Image (cartoon, rainbow, N blue to C red; front, top):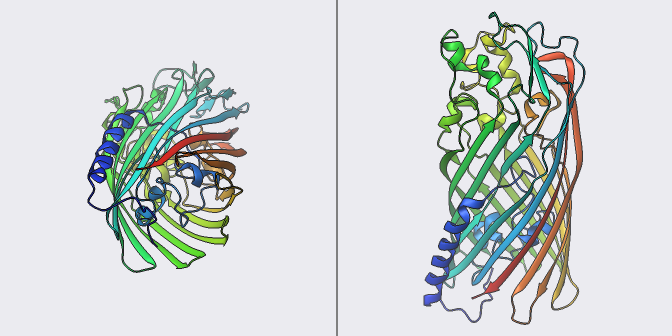
Length: 470
């Protein structure tokens, strides 16, 4: 792999200036990151060209943001800076049927409700830049929102016994879970600091240190108090104060990425990247809701890709990815774990399975595989068209439907297209659009088997970016 930045010389002061400017921009953008999920917690791609190709092309470094997919390509995109903004919109809803229990017999009955989530158009900025240190090495900085979950349900009712075996009767209360309007918000922003080295004529390696911040907030879930480890463990004498309706709680963490890029022939290139789990501090204000006392890490990720430059103006890429959701308690723990909690009156005796416990109820997401194919066609020296398709395993098993009312991220297929236009100055304007078709899932209410719950969602994503050389 070689660098084509003919006007750039190692050691020029602009290297340090570019990186410092990038860090300043990162600090300014860091507080704004928020997004919905595409493939579970992950977006379908990073960088406008990559997203336009369905997330394929990690072996085809053509924009500064390519270092997010593979740190080894920092040399190939050195001397570039890219800033972009995406607008993401998802439509989600849930539907619950009539129940023969209607809160009796220890059941927690939701509705019957038919609730659409509040519409949100989320604006997400990002930036990336890379600069040469020597002709065979480079450093890069990237800031991006990699994941997030933001959902608000207004209205609805829930019917249940608010104090279990206590003196209060079964009651119907407003809200999805009987505690008013329900919402679940996750805000994640990551900064990558990358070093890449060309170790042979054909192969380069890259290493990235990842710093992450995550904000979490949940409202409308205080009805679950009797199922928390705090409440059950105290024999019903201590009410949880870190369950719901608290302020946004911030966690911080770090992880690493390693990558390889190989230019086997002038027309065939290969890339692979592994990102470790990003270990986060605990969300103490939600230690009675999230498993393991508020632990919410970010899952490990493995990507591999191959690109064929069929002609000078046409390229095709095939990529695959595996996201290890099961390694994160909040994502991987099954929602049915709650049935083992003594407070649920389902015969369970495992205190750690209560909410907030080590084995507490999570979302029950599976590890997932994603397959992508994309292509680019330069129709003139200035205009390039891009398109792609990706398909993912369904992360939410049918039996986990109840656990995912607040996180109905069922996306499997993404259809994408976009373009890139080179201005007379040499800078580029890039655009991408993506649609994930509606998916739905139906299963019994975990806490009221006489009732069915259906969740649905679809997604739209539009992104515009500007990139230039320095």
